[in-house]
Length: 452
Image (tube, rainbow, N blue to C red):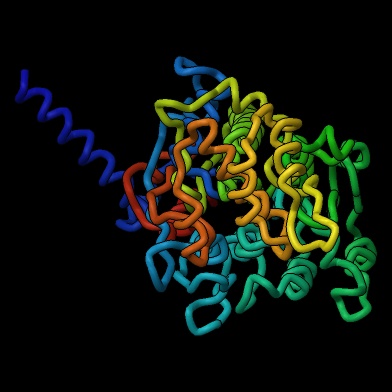
């Protein structure tokens, strides 16, 4: 019996290794080709992130839709220099098969532009779509369609998008499309003049034509956390709704399409150790995966790939995690930060307001000593998201969430990313090519072999 088990284990290992190398060894012709590909990226989504979402939503015996995908691989994520990647370098590796330094987008270490998978598919006649719950010009989406030395070059990224003339662009970020950031040119008007329908909220997205080109910008900056939508009375669409509309449009192309849809705020919430926001963003991402899997299954010609660019803050459920306490947190840590009040000379946030936001939005009573300690970590010059990081760390400690300390987060340049492997899930024609373990620079190469 031991010998039989050993033979079975060896067979499984050899099968995984062989499948991983199909694209490299010239055996790709044996793979069933896909006409279309949907790539769903959970930014910052590690194994612990998924497990937290699963347990919070479904309990210990429940299951994410992602888990129902049978073909699974493992991917390393390190950048060209150092151990830990940011989203710019990770996105560039995924999209272009090229290692670069943190902060660079669509260029190699010498700042030379490198071809993206979107250009490859566009040149073969396929339509292209990009979706993000971040700003559409942020690092991960930009890596698929821009070439800039620094991820801060958002105005240039927007112009690269215009030059590419992709069929669908949806997400947050009107700020860098306006004249103030574009040398007096209104890039939204340029997109409209080039034939794009332009939508600004959930209702106009739903009413937009299901063919042609579509630009949707729903917030000035990144889109709101799901936990905050009610507080802001927001009418922005969900990731699922944006993805549904994109598929309606892109599927009209007889030559096929490439769609990248990013659940970006998983990462933002994880940076703060905000497990409640991570849970809600993770489930919205998983529901989007569900829709794509069911949509693709009805067609039979579409490959769905689900992955992450990196893991953030080593977030994971702990033995002592207070699930009910986390569910009592009604808004994001960042929203809590925005509600803080300054003292009379604007030099610090008051201890009383710190205590009040924890009581009001998290049902947690901080002692004066605890609030005073947090006050020292909340200098007024910090951005609201950075204040949210500090508040989230306290929430995590109070409610037993497993994650790295604020000291580790503040010591590095990525704000808490890790070098952990990330998963790759694949379903559809050619899915077996994603089995095994490989580097993120292999990702686009595998896609090129199985999507034709």
